[in-house]
Length: 180
Image 1 (cartoon, helix red, strand yellow):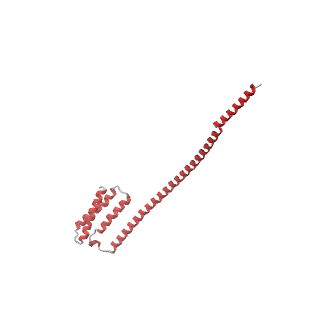
Image 2: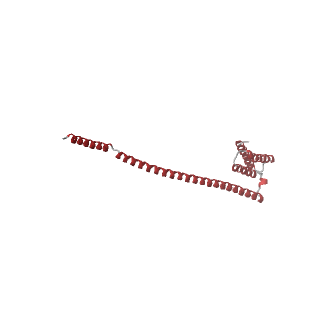
Image 3: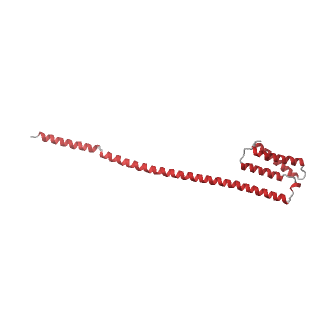
């Protein structure tokens, strides 16, 4: 039985149970047996469905509730034991829901811890990148200053001035060497 078939069968049985409740005392024993056997078949088939455990428990509670409420009025008329049983079932359902909530809260806690760890790793990576960027920026500034000094030291104007000075000195020496 597939999930959709299970849902359709449950809806059909729920409608049938609702109709039986509205009829009141005029319920035949065969109708009640048919309903009970259908509900038992649904409950047994739940184990074969590919559902999560929480979803299976929820569906079992639905079937059990339908079984309890679909009993003919003669069997369901306010006896103290029946009310106690219903209250006990309600408390068990609430306990199961609280357990499901606790599991969900535990998962949220684990996810929060994982997110915190991942955020811390990201912060550490960003801090490392910022440090590396600052070091690279300082290195670039140092290299820029060094290149400017080299450019000043190896200036063409300075060399041209030296050549001009040496040329003047050469001309003076030649003129002095030629004069008697």
